[in-house]
Length: 192
Image (cartoon, rainbow, N blue to C red; front, side, top):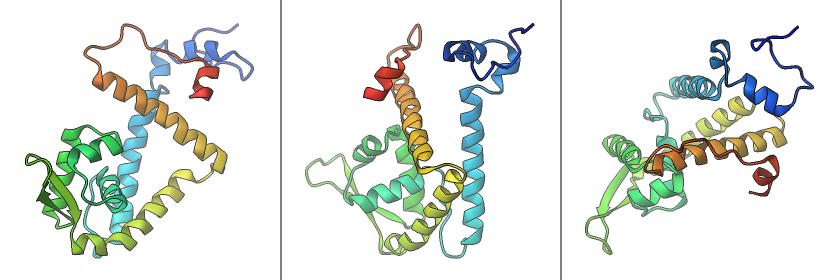
């Protein structure tokens, strides 16, 4: 006889698995928020480890600063608002990352000709010289994160994480928390 704390069978329905993972204290440690926290801290440890291997060559980048750096490589002259939109990060987070990159001499801010309140962001000569090392560090991160996953699985993971990020963005921009989470059908998610 099974109880609510027994793991669902492999043949169990997805709704039964969802119910199982949303009730009982034992299930909390296997919930998505806990996995995301583990992933975040594991990623920070990976970045620190990779930084240790090239600490003489590259400055310390906080998590997220690499995204800002590569977005500026993609299109220099962006504003902080442009970066926030491109990266899907809150503007205060972008501002903090930019402050650190500017302090390290990686970027510079120049007044925007079109909007006197905005600043255009550019990589410095020093910042541009960091590209090969930062690309190498990024490739090592990707290799570690995708180890044991097929290309299709890695693509599916990126797609699923994009859904989670979209959920977080929706809540961040909402005036109040939704009464009940909106759950797309499997067909609806594939169409999106």
